[in-house]
Image (cartoon, rainbow, N blue to C red; front, side, top):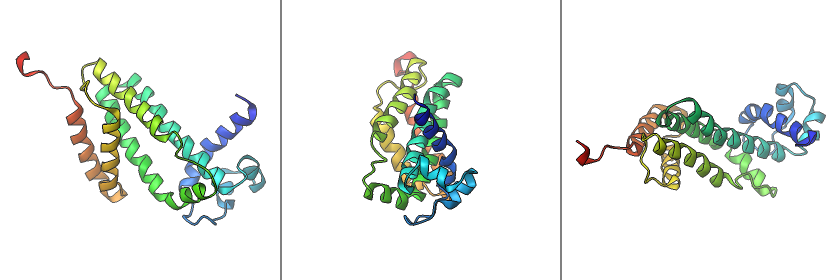
Length: 188
């Protein structure tokens, strides 16, 4: 990885949290972001020539962080607990995207595609979690990752606002219960 790529990745990591607080308006200044990150506006623009480039980098970084956490979770906890933990992170991830909707639309309008490969990355993360759960017999083997992604998206649509987080948690518990492996009826 080149030093420029490494530097851009580091900037994206540092600025992801800051961009969550971006005002929705596409014309909002990047000066507060630079100030909060402890850098000058010139340094910010050297790495991200436009506000949209910064938002896209932050979005992609946050997606990579979420998806990468699946392998870390299955390595450190039982697969069903790892899946439930990841589900919480997914709902939180979508909540931040809801707040950035206008900014992401501006990225798209400027020719960017922040969502390229998002679905594939999310499906790969869910596959990691389901495969680990099937291997340790905690989760069903017959579940399609796309069905889990659709279910998680539905939970986010219904209960994705911060004040609905308790309801989202209950819905995620119901979803996980449906994904758990049940002993066969004849195993009695």
